Length: 521
Image 1 (tube, rainbow, N blue to C red):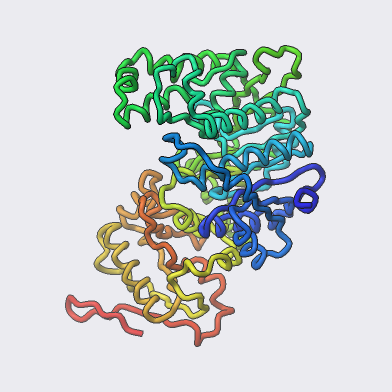
Image 2: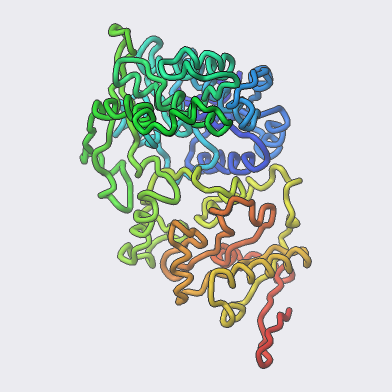
């Protein structure tokens, strides 16, 4: 029933949603796609309560949970005990569901992570530019990222189906039979407790190398990590191998390097330029594809796996995203003649810097990612209706607006702005109001450094007269800074200000007496 409720025209998008933070970003992703006219979403949740919360906000959403799979007991390998058991079960379940949707139900599946921003509908590209590739996967080291992939036109028994099935076989093997790691060519030395790496991405990359080389390998994804993590637990045999540079190079590159030599180059078809609707069109260059075969089975039909270009599936904040984003901001687009939405998103003619960005590199969890999405203007307020118990801020329409004079003195660094923002947010909490956060000063050198990806303390948003640098509460910081504390950016307040009753808005300003500054309402 869930498949029937979610699939449309042989297509389905699969999204896994865990706790409260993922519920918010997950629901935002659902709403983001619905704004593009894409409704064929199937959500896999941790438990019924997650689906119930999502249904409270969006009753028509197809949502399922799988307690038998998620609650299955796991033996005490290092991998099974060192990492979050619920997360591991979740990652396992989503790949099993992916295989069933593709191989059993014969659906094309867009496999999603909740920590992604989609600036454009990916299907025009997937169905034209890359229609001949059975698997289109986000590129990562050494080949692929297991979180973002599109699988299409797969037939049972072909090489693409083998990749999905083999991935689940390996995850199952090392999850439930960790002792089987001793059967591998370079891991006979291992003793219990074994690490037995069942990670989906590590195993997917080993499978791609296996397919390209025509022989099974577990070296880079399983055997290298067996030694690495066993060394950390005091194994002398593991330490001996990790100290042997020749051994470690063989595990990491012995099969990967020849496999990479077998990748083929796919050149752009510029007759499809109108489909690739980018601000920075020179981002569209040649990409690599893996001609997939089943090792030891020459009769299995071949398939192609494409390592997606960065303009399609991009990493964040590094890579091509920000160089392309700056091109989108150029004054030459003639912003005065474009719509308010194009100006807010900095998408001239709705051209985009990349189709998607994946924020797995941000350390501040779902709250930090929510902050980035709100800064880019792609956050839907309806997504905040789920998990209300995690909020610190009151859910209110009453606003606290800081005037521009608040920033005219005393801000000599990013730390100064952080202190100002923290005090402003605290004042908003005490008054029971939602803070309108002013932008960073335009002419400060420290504010210029703040927008660099390595710092990511601010992002330039808005184009034309509303262009500004907005504050980000430390998305690179490992602690969930500002979790549960809400605020509104000044650029978004300006757009809705005419519709807000004056009684709901409180303005504050700085009055200077000598060297003292005081806040007045």
